[in-house]
Length: 555
Ligand code: NOJ
Image (tube, rainbow, N blue to C red; front, side, top):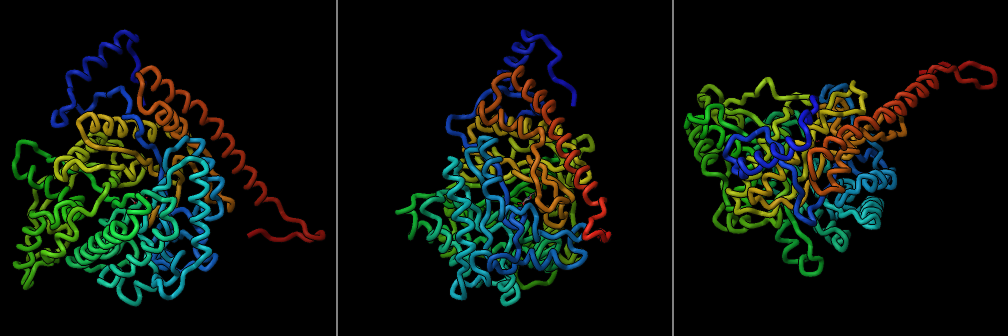
């Protein structure tokens, strides 16, 4: 990355002043590249995140039941290199170590999820409650609070109990609504005296589309054209039910908030003067974020989804729309069930109109939208294939949320960037750049009037990245997965993020450039430590073990 600071300090100030006043925080103007120096509102909450299956390991310890991800990852050919989350980061055994890392970062909050089958092994509360699972989360929550770190808890980060999948078909079945509500009630009962921020679901888009339409994720079903819509329908109902349960039974005593974490890429029209592209880009966002947010804020699916899926379903000979509908009672029950909105955002696409003739395509979530996604080859893409760094898309998405859903309270629940496994480089300059620019666009969005209250860097640690296994690393901390103790090493981005947190933003160009330089300088010592540890473990593995004078083979 090129250093920005080639000007004298005086020039820099003039430039900064010009940029901020000229831009005037009008997000519709194309001021993509200007950086805004300034701080976040007092009390802004800085955090990092994780999820149970991705980090805990201990997949079969202390009475935990199987989840759909345990089963899916054990099937050959589903995950890169057949990796599993069996031991992952061993987070289950490392509460103290990980809370120390959070303290080092000076986090205000930590976002994690509760594994449903760790608490209720079959998923059905009346069958059995696993007290050891409760103890684990008790301990984690208590450690966080002792360290003045606010726990932000997700109830469902994709690890459905396997029994519920086998018995009922998982989210294809309406009975999940009550089972999930029972699980949520148990969490409110046992942890709600200490946990005040709850999220029902994480990224239900992925659960529905990748779990039940493309089959890339657990449970791996390919119910093209119907599976995702049906799963989403039940998830939205389950979310609403849990919100009402909290509202009527727990809010009075516990005084917490219940939201949902939705993910959404931004869709920008390829040609901003072409009405068809503008509408296609709008459809992209409505089929992504709007699919879940519109029922929750307005009581029903986006009109454009109803129109497109409805029309195509009829053309394909279906009697009714493949998109299920809500009754009037359901609409009013679902509307307004969100105390805050969690937003997970990573990337952006250019969108253009593209017809997918109904009869030929047979119907799928993807062809229902009648659009094509494009990327600019100049966008940086350091890690995951789908993840291009396009910071300005973040500001646009946040402004979209403000204008569409009545300026709700927002917590950014995920934002970050990966690198490939083979890269053992701790000097992650590109991640610093990504965080710097995305966090800055969030600051601009706040100046636009978007009500963002907190930010969660994704993720605290490298971890199991779903169907990509351990091949993509999102962590601020590097985890050496080849060592069975799973030691953690800080990447340079730890130093940078720490400074952003302690300054509550970006005080001025000189300081921010300084943080960055220092972060990259100090990481070379962590690099050496990691390299030395690697050499040691290699030597150890290569050294023949002696046992009463007999040489033993090493496997
Ligand atoms: C969203 C998911 O919620 C999270 O689990 C995953 O690690 C990130 N996307 C990155 O792919």
